[in-house]
Amino acid sequence: MAQRNVPSVERIATYLSIPEENAAVVRGLLKGTISTRAIKGAGYTMYDKFHDRKMKALNHVIDGYGVEAVGDFNSYPPVCYFEYVNTGDTYNPTIVYCNGFYSLTTFGDKVESLERRGVKLP
Image 1 (cartoon, rainbow, N blue to C red):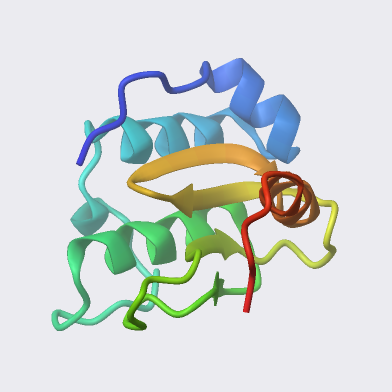
Image 2 (image 1 turned 180 degrees about the vertical axis):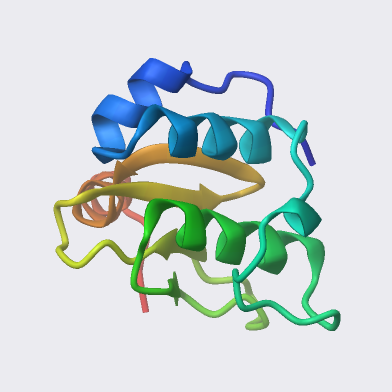
């Protein structure tokens, strides 16, 4: 799924502290103009779902420490669930996926915003 409101290359580069070439790839992945197949060495398999490939590709491009998830996607009733690229610290800028949208934020800020809204995290 392509996302409409994607930050500029300059904003991505500045926020994530990555080169503009990498930021352009991040923007292309988020907009859907660059295929995950174009990202070599991202560590995904042909059995990964599209979203998993995209998150692994984003992790590879921003030189993260892996993709991590919070919550239980398969529970009923559903519990809050989101994924993020681990960048080494709770308040380091990263890419977070939640409810079909990708955002530039920090893991800590995402958790705090959900807790302020009364969302229970597992």
